Image (cartoon, rainbow, N blue to C red; front, side, top):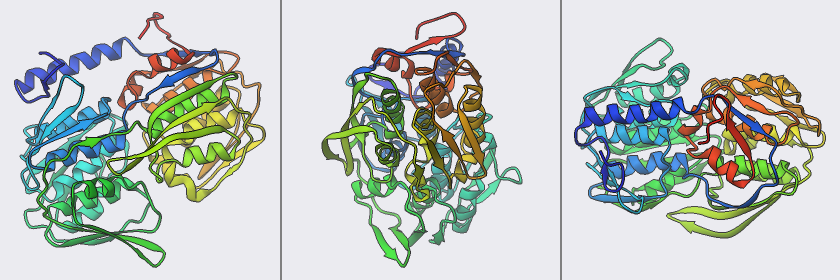
Length: 476
């Protein structure tokens, strides 16, 4: 089957294509396992990182809920997002890619989702799983969710609890981990729900469930989280009200709107851009430009923190694209100084703490990171995994219940093999570390990087990195 142009994903000859797609991914995985990162030369040049993962998931979902054809440019083509595309196709959407690389989604409308014939395999994606659970909770079908070992260990109860209030039922383990079956409700009731943890995924799951619920559903946030869902709703003309309520914010959605297709632009991912950013900051002589990066205020805590540490980071050509702030980021090598990162900044950079640890490893003094309990339940226990890996590479680090303290040094040795625990951000962070340490750093599984940053190794090597396959020295 032709993959490009005009591919119709998993729509025709679905069982055959799914097998073929799986084979392609498996072959790719076999060619990448252990990766070793050697000391880099100065990083130079303009680059563009992949599309924003959070927005890509939401764009596919919203295109599915609209009537007509939505065009998505800049979609992240990583495994996590492709699994969401497969899930939307399994529930009736027609998804294809044109000769320009744009993705076309022919939607089924709100209330038009079909029951999937097979379990939805979400792979490694907690975002995809939790958002789609919200989507199907108010659709009168039974939907089973499965995932890889990492996703199957992660908590879903934080999502199932509010979705049960609509009337949905969930069947799985006592701890509500995958595999999990959702029995949607045919006559859902609108709810008001105060989110107990700062989680954009929980908020978004409730808001998506509200779309097929009559009346007004309200989510109350004590701590602001990324607002891509709200911006996407506004882009599609959904009636949404965001109002301060004392020390909290109330987000109210009026359900059962009629959605018509919209074109969508996905900026490049600020989380992905953080990896070449830190690499340039710690590699002497580096000067890079990262193009078209999403600058949503709820996502740029990592850049504010790095600037507080003395990073030479400039935002150029700032503009708006489909309601999202976008800019080009110029990054130059900088001598960093450790700081205490404000706890209230964590929601805006929760995924970037692993790579911040790498910057902190070469900063003067201590970088103290607290208030990070959420990192314990990500793809891995990122606090414990980062502490273990950093110590193995000669970095001085202290673990706390809610974070870590890293003491910087110019003499970090590297030389270790780090276990990634199926966590793409752990893998990329330690490959960035190896670009500066005296001895190479090896990660035990580079395949997980494909979930969020396809082409990571090629991009970093094109800038001046030296990341190789550790098994046969293959080039990717």
